[in-house]
Length: 563
Ligand code: ARG
View (tube, rainbow, N blue to C red):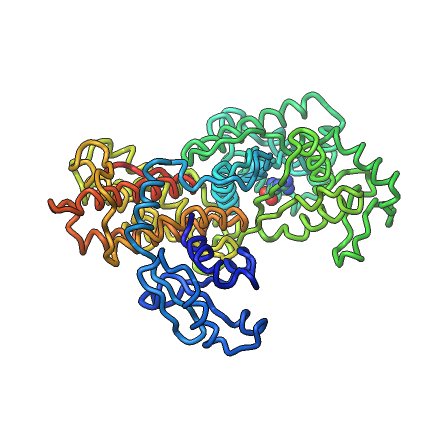
């Protein structure tokens, strides 16, 4: 039973006649000033029903309610404020965390159903951008949180592996490319060819024509073109894989745009059969003006299919293959309209499951406040960013704890964790500036700060030796431990909240707050003092490490035992 439920139970005898449990629970608040109480129940609503002054009702309810679970019940104006019996609540929560371990906080929101999650989805033959980093990190966290809430996640990398850029690339490669160079440094070399193509095309328009022809040949199945395309795809994927390995991210499917080449025709047919499409200047479109959206472009006048057509085919494929309960797309906010269109077209086709499509948008990573731009030479290679973060972490560890064992592994976890955590700690729609030096700091609201807190708590537990067990009644009632107990008790709600909103930042912020609460505790309480509260303190530290480690794990961040 969580704290709100305790209060609901206590209030039921007094107000159950007028409000059901859910209504009582919705009204419960947490006072801004913890000295007023742990929870408060406002009586405005009851006052309306009973036509009496709220203050008066507060007095009456306080009189009539069951007060056994509280150390204090106090009426402040129209509010009934309660303080929970700390040792009782604490015993309950700590015992539960220790008993459940890493499964503490799990809950059955998803009921075992499938959540397909489309994330990362970079474009072949281009470097993976910072935007793709955001998608990768957010999508990976959402998949972890989905597992924790009993969804079955299916991680899909919808690679951008088809399109006119391949025609251009093939022309550039065949024109002036060097096989050995491409083999040695695929993505960099391919990007170079692509950029050169555009430079040359400015003075030589015939190149564009050649690019279009090459793409057409590719679409028509020309073997040489297909072989080159396959090679570019494979080499690019190898590069992306390096980044995924560093981040510890995996996928269940790499079906990208090309996979749907032969799966669009039936969709277009169905759209036409259902009379949803129109032909406009030779192009096939779905008019969405009733939905206040621009028309969805299904087929160009030359027969070429489009991004949304592929996504329609992909949505059907996912529904048929996985029978998802939710179909999630972690893609930048720039593509908001695209996903609205996708949903609207499916809805027009009569599929109720269009409601289960969820676009999870996010803001930009900026540099000195402005948008990163490939043209301005802001191409940042992700692999380099991550490696630099690891180096910076190594320097800090070298300075703080030169004798640490497994320094390389710890530096890896801290450097990579810092980048991930920084991305996830702000609401995903906010844009943020990327400053590596700040991200890897051990102080402030950073990943390394949380990791360091975990390692510090673990070192206390190592001194105690064998697993901390609660060998006596939980008897802590001081403010510092109570703050930790309350936070640990809130963990299941935090997870539910972050899943409902597809918002990993809820968990990241929580992890910072839990770490801060622990560090206050650590600074003010002598944890290992030999007295009759020692066992309870150790159990509290133990429970804290379980939850902190799990919160980091959900975000995709490792927690080193020592650092
Ligand atoms: N490749 C696209 C891009 O980089 C993202 C694809 C997102 N997924 C999708 N099903 N449309 O912009």
